Amino acid sequence: MAKPTPGAKNLPVKYPSVPDSEAGPSRYNEPDIPTGVDRVPADRFQLGDTRADLRLRIEQLLQRKEAVPDDAWAQLGPDARDLLVEMLDDEAVRSREEVLHRVISVIGQLAVKRGITPLSSILADGSARNVTQAYAANALGRIGEPAAIEALVAAANVKDDMVRRQLAIALGRIERETVVPHLLKLSEDQSIAVAEVAAEAVGRWEQKLGRPLGAKRKVATTKSAGKARAKKKPAPEEG
Image 1 (tube, one colour):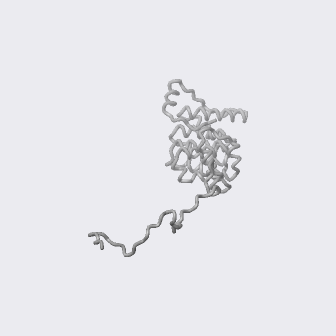
Image 2 (spheres, rainbow, N blue to C red):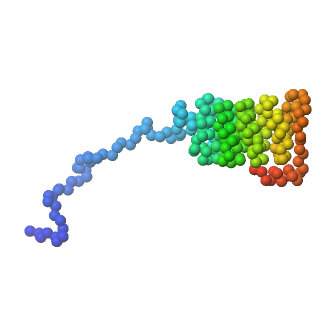
Image 3 (cartoon, rainbow, N blue to C red):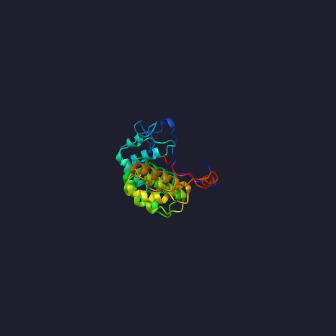
């Protein structure tokens, strides 16, 4: 009889070796490979009609580098306009300045009247950056509603020339005679860039009313105008 090897543990029972070809099925079988129905589409996801899907469509348009035509936004329906306005208070949007500016611009482009109140709040927010306030003023002018006059006038004493210029442009777009006194005041602004656009707006009112309104038109020298352009950041698109 063979002696046990020192240190080795002997199994209490000897199990016969079974070839793999004769072994039965394992106890825990792997799941079947998913069928074609369960797999992710190979080309792209098909968006549905939920509010989350609409948000994704809006974000896709906002991320486009080229200008998005109005009909592309119109195809999304009126709910998209409401969602754009709600995005102004979205922390995820506010944390990305370029996205916030794009949202503001689109609201102005589409002349969404519901946007007047939140845009007015941005314009009056002392903690907002000047460029953001300029975008808000520009959008309010594009909407062109008299309801925006109060907010535009209240911000007329802001120190930044770029913002005041956009305020003058915005007031000039609103077809209400009550803007004339404010445009006259801005036509005397110390910044030629502000005064010239305000004076142009007053000139349009003079033609419309058929009488002079007394706007003072400042003329910029080549040297001073060049310095002003060098110091200021580009304002939002005015066209």
